[in-house]
Length: 155
Image 1 (cartoon, helix red, strand yellow):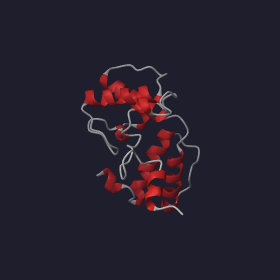
Image 2: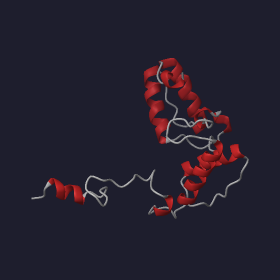
Image 3: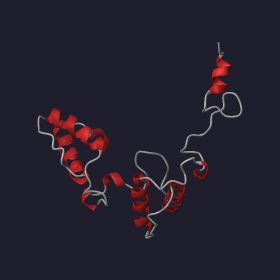
């Protein structure tokens, strides 16, 4: 039978001292990431290119996850952008016109499709599964206005 102390020690999040926790990946040095040498994610690439464009810089498309993370931090610092999710000062990618999105002509994301299905059902309209990311974003805005959903976030 294991004790609470045994369970705490066996917890993979536990660090050297009892009760101390390892930092999350958001706090861990990217050079220490196990997957840091893998190609950067699509989300990293999109955000990195947005930041670089705003700074008048060009960035290579073949960066690793760790390199991209470090470059994002560098560009955010240069732009005076604060950390954290939910809208960085000076960078309002969520407010960018969907027609200007580099990936706007790709199929909508799973999250967009799920939310659109919910909104469509609430608004009593048909769900169109063939929308692009940009079209889905615009449709979400339209249906939010019709249903009253999400309005507090936009005010």
